[in-house]
Length: 193
Ligand code: IMP
Image 1 (cartoon, helix red, strand yellow):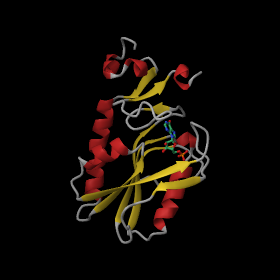
Image 2 (cartoon, rainbow, N blue to C red):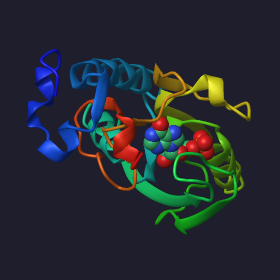
Image 3 (tube, rainbow, N blue to C red):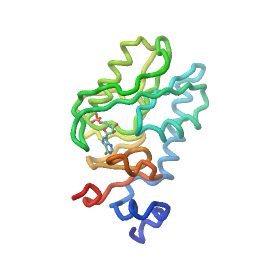
């Protein structure tokens, strides 16, 4: 940990040593979620939402967004696996866990941690639209526009990030670092380099 980033003191030492730098501090995430939740609440005033969180990365976004909403919202989750390397996806998507509920005629808000190439979300949106919801929109905490391979309508975006691999606030590398309150980049040695 460098002296410039004392907020990392809460981390397990093994994780702290792997952090390169804090890209988005927890306080900024919280402020941005306040803004997004206000927007969503205004846009969906008078309706009822179904938040569809994409496991596992979106768990904190779903929880923290839900707690800020001023409209009634149900929550459901999907888990998908996209085939690819450890840090990129291929667009070949398999549903590991489907929704527990029917979405026909409902207002669905898909909640994502990050949209990178967009291939996973593109598949998911096509799949969800085929179930005839009243509306489907997307909220993603992060987006990497420079990596996009398909044009996607992301209605609510938290932050644009550069083409770097980030972890924390739900995002993992090999299932680690999800619990970090901040969004950070990792040193090369964290990837086993
Ligand atoms: P896409 O299909 O390329 O848009 O990939 C989306 C998924 O890849 C996300 O839901 C994440 O699980 C994962 N992913 C993409 N970029 C990152 C990153 O920088 N850190 C952690 N996971 C990422």
